[in-house]
Image (cartoon, rainbow, N blue to C red; front, top):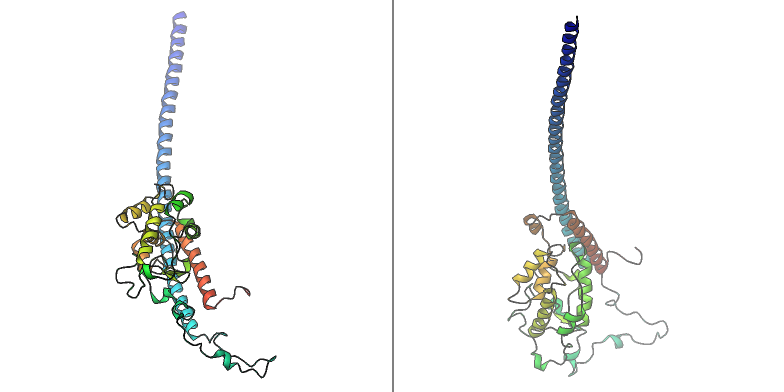
Length: 323
């Protein structure tokens, strides 16, 4: 009887150990299966997320490209309409014939509208002359040897601009490039500061494709080849400073390096603005160089709208007082 009870205890002990081992094996197998299922589900989820993000990016880029093309087409159409309307606008009140005075009805107004007699100092009168900006335009590389066939030599000019303050501008002006999204304000600040040190820039509304950012005249005084070279060198050395255009803007650093032989700051500034300014970007340029970020697209749209408003005010399509 004692032997039978001992065998029974051994059998129960063996059964309990076997049950524990079986439970441990089942737990391990189930854990591995669950981990494999979780890993596969995670990979499948990542693939779906990547596919969805790729599709959304493609749709966003396609929509942005279509919107940019449509925007440029509308801009060209609007500018053509404004030019046509400006050509058809009636004569200004300045050109209208004078009416008899109510206070002095006996005065002959024709005596005051006759052409003045020619004088020997007529060459100093520039009121009736055509502005030099419309008579002469430079390419984006500035004046050439034959761009000023009738220019007065520097040593016999009756008026001259103040000299360029090269050292003062490099030491006192600190305008770090803030990025493409704020380049419009940066250019306005650079234009204002450059004027103080006799380095002149044209206004943003005067931007033209393949035309220099240097004005052809300032205060009615023609800018000759020598003056252009002085200002372009000062502007180049200012932009070449690492504190102005930092190393994070590698594309702008490449532009500066490309113009190191000519040290033409106006050409460097033109290439910088040509990346985002609507008056310097053509549809073909946009098709060749796809702009990567939405921020640049928004900057183009805002700058384009601002430029159109300024042009509309100039040609009389918008009255800022009534608006």
